[in-house]
Length: 194
Figure 1 (cartoon, rainbow, N blue to C red):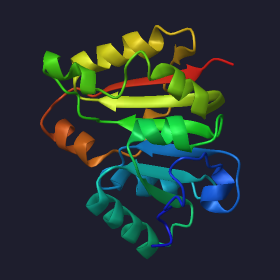
Figure 2 (figure 1 turned 30 degrees about the horizontal axis):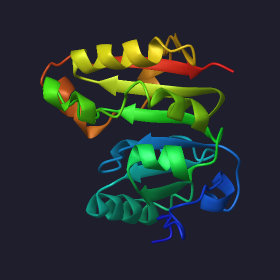
Figure 3 (figure 1 turned 135 degrees about the vertical axis):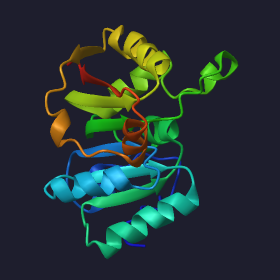
C-alpha cells in the first residue's frame, strides 16, 4: 500500500519529508478509525499533507486502500498508538494541526487513566505542533469535553480560541450518528503558544 508509511525503525524520529517525500508540516488525524474524516479533509485540501494514525491494522488497511482508490497522494496511514507516534516518532514542530475527533471517552471513573488527554500528554502535543499549531477536538461526551478543556485549556502551553469554520469541517461517521440521535456536539480549538 503506497499510502501506508511503515517505519523501518520504530525507535527514531521522522520528518514530514521522510513520510511523504517532501514537505515540512502536516496535519494528523489521531485515531483515524474508518478514515471518513481523513479522506474528506484530504479531498477538501489537496495542497495539505495528512497522516492518519490508527492502532488497528484492519482499519488502517481499509483507509489506505480507500485513499489509493481515490488517488489521494496527500494521505499516509501509520499503524501506531497516537501518543507513541507523537512523542517518539514524529519530528518536533512538524504538525500544523492535530485532529482529535470523537475519541473513546472512557466514561467510567476507574478508566479515566486510559484517556489520551492527560496532564502529561500536554507537553507531547506542544512538542509536535509547530508554533501557533492547533489541536481541534470534538466529542459528544460532555464530561470528557470538560476534562480536555480543563487540562489543555488550563496549561500555559496552549490557549483556547474560537473555532470559526465549523461548518466547513468534514463530519465523522460518529458525528453524523450522534447528531441523528439528537446529541449535542462539543467542539474546542486550542492553539500552541510560541
